[in-house]
Image (tube, rainbow, N blue to C red; front, side, top):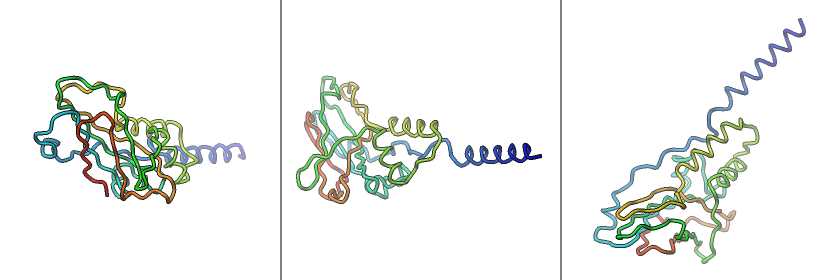
Length: 188
Protein backbone atom coordinates (compact mmCIF):
# COMPACT_ATOMS: atom_id res chain seq x y z
CA UNK A 1 0.00 0.00 0.00
CA UNK A 2 2.75 2.47 0.96
CA UNK A 3 4.82 1.35 -2.04
CA UNK A 4 1.89 2.15 -4.36
CA UNK A 5 1.57 5.66 -2.85
CA UNK A 6 5.29 6.30 -3.20
CA UNK A 7 5.20 5.08 -6.81
CA UNK A 8 2.17 7.29 -7.54
CA UNK A 9 3.85 10.37 -6.03
CA UNK A 10 7.08 9.69 -7.94
CA UNK A 11 5.23 9.26 -11.23
CA UNK A 12 3.20 12.42 -10.60
CA UNK A 13 6.30 14.48 -9.84
CA UNK A 14 8.05 13.08 -12.92
CA UNK A 15 5.07 13.97 -15.10
CA UNK A 16 4.86 17.50 -13.70
CA UNK A 17 8.61 18.04 -14.18
CA UNK A 18 8.59 16.80 -17.76
CA UNK A 19 5.51 18.79 -18.76
CA UNK A 20 6.54 21.93 -16.86
CA UNK A 21 9.84 22.21 -18.70
CA UNK A 22 9.20 22.68 -22.40
CA UNK A 23 11.33 21.79 -25.35
CA UNK A 24 13.17 25.13 -25.11
CA UNK A 25 13.79 27.60 -22.32
CA UNK A 26 13.01 30.56 -24.59
CA UNK A 27 11.64 30.50 -28.10
CA UNK A 28 13.91 32.34 -30.53
CA UNK A 29 12.20 33.81 -33.58
CA UNK A 30 13.90 33.50 -36.95
CA UNK A 31 15.51 36.59 -38.38
CA UNK A 32 12.68 38.84 -39.59
CA UNK A 33 12.45 40.27 -43.08
CA UNK A 34 13.62 43.85 -43.20
CA UNK A 35 13.61 46.63 -45.71
CA UNK A 36 15.48 45.83 -48.86
CA UNK A 37 19.19 46.47 -48.59
CA UNK A 38 19.02 47.85 -52.13
CA UNK A 39 16.70 50.62 -50.87
CA UNK A 40 19.22 51.56 -48.17
CA UNK A 41 22.44 51.37 -50.18
CA UNK A 42 21.43 52.09 -53.74
CA UNK A 43 24.53 52.87 -55.76
CA UNK A 44 26.98 52.11 -52.92
CA UNK A 45 30.01 49.94 -53.69
CA UNK A 46 32.29 47.96 -51.39
CA UNK A 47 31.61 45.90 -48.28
CA UNK A 48 28.67 47.46 -46.46
CA UNK A 49 27.27 46.81 -42.98
CA UNK A 50 23.65 47.59 -42.14
CA UNK A 51 22.75 47.25 -38.45
CA UNK A 52 19.95 47.62 -35.93
CA UNK A 53 20.40 47.55 -32.15
CA UNK A 54 17.50 45.71 -30.50
CA UNK A 55 15.75 47.44 -27.61
CA UNK A 56 13.82 45.67 -24.84
CA UNK A 57 10.53 45.36 -26.75
CA UNK A 58 12.23 44.07 -29.91
CA UNK A 59 14.24 41.52 -27.92
CA UNK A 60 11.05 40.34 -26.16
CA UNK A 61 9.48 39.70 -29.56
CA UNK A 62 12.49 37.84 -30.91
CA UNK A 63 13.93 36.09 -27.82
CA UNK A 64 11.04 35.94 -25.31
CA UNK A 65 13.33 37.83 -22.95
CA UNK A 66 14.26 41.46 -22.34
CA UNK A 67 17.93 41.17 -23.25
CA UNK A 68 18.99 44.70 -22.17
CA UNK A 69 17.57 44.12 -18.67
CA UNK A 70 19.47 40.83 -18.54
CA UNK A 71 22.72 42.61 -19.43
CA UNK A 72 22.84 41.70 -23.12
CA UNK A 73 22.71 43.98 -26.16
CA UNK A 74 21.79 42.26 -29.41
CA UNK A 75 22.81 43.81 -32.72
CA UNK A 76 21.13 42.60 -35.91
CA UNK A 77 23.85 42.81 -38.59
CA UNK A 78 23.62 42.47 -42.35
CA UNK A 79 26.79 42.50 -44.43
CA UNK A 80 26.55 43.13 -48.16
CA UNK A 81 29.52 42.45 -50.44
CA UNK A 82 29.38 44.78 -53.43
CA UNK A 83 32.94 44.02 -54.49
CA UNK A 84 34.48 41.67 -57.04
CA UNK A 85 36.35 39.66 -54.39
CA UNK A 86 35.31 37.29 -51.62
CA UNK A 87 35.60 38.56 -48.04
CA UNK A 88 36.46 36.34 -45.09
CA UNK A 89 34.28 37.48 -42.21
CA UNK A 90 36.87 36.42 -39.64
CA UNK A 91 39.05 39.27 -40.97
CA UNK A 92 36.42 41.82 -39.86
CA UNK A 93 36.38 43.33 -36.38
CA UNK A 94 32.95 44.01 -34.83
CA UNK A 95 32.79 46.66 -32.09
CA UNK A 96 30.06 48.28 -30.02
CA UNK A 97 30.93 51.46 -28.14
CA UNK A 98 28.88 53.34 -25.59
CA UNK A 99 28.33 57.10 -25.64
CA UNK A 100 31.54 57.59 -23.61
CA UNK A 101 33.62 55.73 -26.20
CA UNK A 102 34.14 52.57 -24.12
CA UNK A 103 34.10 49.23 -25.94
CA UNK A 104 31.53 46.67 -24.84
CA UNK A 105 32.70 43.06 -24.63
CA UNK A 106 31.39 40.64 -27.21
CA UNK A 107 29.46 37.59 -25.95
CA UNK A 108 29.00 34.20 -27.57
CA UNK A 109 25.39 33.09 -28.00
CA UNK A 110 25.85 30.66 -25.08
CA UNK A 111 27.20 33.43 -22.82
CA UNK A 112 24.25 35.64 -23.77
CA UNK A 113 21.80 32.86 -22.87
CA UNK A 114 23.55 32.28 -19.52
CA UNK A 115 23.08 35.96 -18.65
CA UNK A 116 19.39 35.77 -19.59
CA UNK A 117 18.89 32.62 -17.53
CA UNK A 118 20.62 34.18 -14.53
CA UNK A 119 18.52 37.35 -14.77
CA UNK A 120 15.25 35.40 -14.97
CA UNK A 121 16.32 32.95 -12.24
CA UNK A 122 16.24 29.83 -14.39
CA UNK A 123 18.11 27.39 -12.19
CA UNK A 124 15.86 24.36 -12.71
CA UNK A 125 15.56 23.21 -16.32
CA UNK A 126 16.01 20.21 -18.54
CA UNK A 127 19.45 19.93 -20.11
CA UNK A 128 18.03 19.16 -23.54
CA UNK A 129 15.84 22.29 -23.35
CA UNK A 130 18.91 24.41 -22.63
CA UNK A 131 20.84 22.77 -25.48
CA UNK A 132 18.00 23.44 -27.94
CA UNK A 133 17.84 27.05 -26.80
CA UNK A 134 21.60 27.45 -27.26
CA UNK A 135 21.23 25.96 -30.76
CA UNK A 136 18.49 28.51 -31.53
CA UNK A 137 20.70 31.39 -30.35
CA UNK A 138 23.62 30.08 -32.43
CA UNK A 139 21.41 29.54 -35.49
CA UNK A 140 20.50 33.24 -35.69
CA UNK A 141 24.00 34.39 -34.73
CA UNK A 142 26.18 36.03 -37.38
CA UNK A 143 28.58 33.48 -38.90
CA UNK A 144 31.86 35.24 -38.21
CA UNK A 145 33.97 32.44 -39.67
CA UNK A 146 32.56 32.25 -43.19
CA UNK A 147 33.31 33.65 -46.62
CA UNK A 148 31.08 36.31 -48.12
CA UNK A 149 31.05 35.85 -51.88
CA UNK A 150 30.92 38.79 -54.36
CA UNK A 151 27.44 40.32 -54.55
CA UNK A 152 26.40 38.15 -51.59
CA UNK A 153 25.03 39.08 -48.19
CA UNK A 154 25.16 37.62 -44.71
CA UNK A 155 22.85 38.30 -41.79
CA UNK A 156 22.81 37.43 -38.11
CA UNK A 157 22.83 38.71 -34.54
CA UNK A 158 25.89 39.62 -32.47
CA UNK A 159 25.65 39.82 -28.68
CA UNK A 160 27.46 42.31 -26.44
CA UNK A 161 27.72 42.74 -22.67
CA UNK A 162 25.64 45.56 -21.19
CA UNK A 163 27.40 46.88 -18.13
CA UNK A 164 24.64 47.21 -15.51
CA UNK A 165 23.14 50.69 -15.45
CA UNK A 166 26.19 52.37 -16.99
CA UNK A 167 25.29 51.45 -20.56
CA UNK A 168 22.32 53.14 -22.18
CA UNK A 169 20.95 51.93 -25.50
CA UNK A 170 20.93 55.53 -26.68
CA UNK A 171 24.21 56.71 -28.13
CA UNK A 172 25.65 53.29 -28.90
CA UNK A 173 27.92 53.10 -31.93
CA UNK A 174 28.39 49.84 -33.79
CA UNK A 175 31.31 49.59 -36.16
CA UNK A 176 32.87 46.98 -38.37
CA UNK A 177 36.54 47.50 -39.09
CA UNK A 178 37.15 46.42 -42.66
CA UNK A 179 33.92 47.62 -44.30
CA UNK A 180 33.75 50.35 -46.90
CA UNK A 181 30.47 51.89 -45.75
CA UNK A 182 28.80 51.70 -42.33
CA UNK A 183 25.04 52.30 -42.14
CA UNK A 184 23.20 52.29 -38.78
CA UNK A 185 19.44 51.97 -39.13
CA UNK A 186 18.03 51.80 -35.59
CA UNK A 187 20.54 53.18 -33.12
CA UNK A 188 18.03 54.66 -30.64
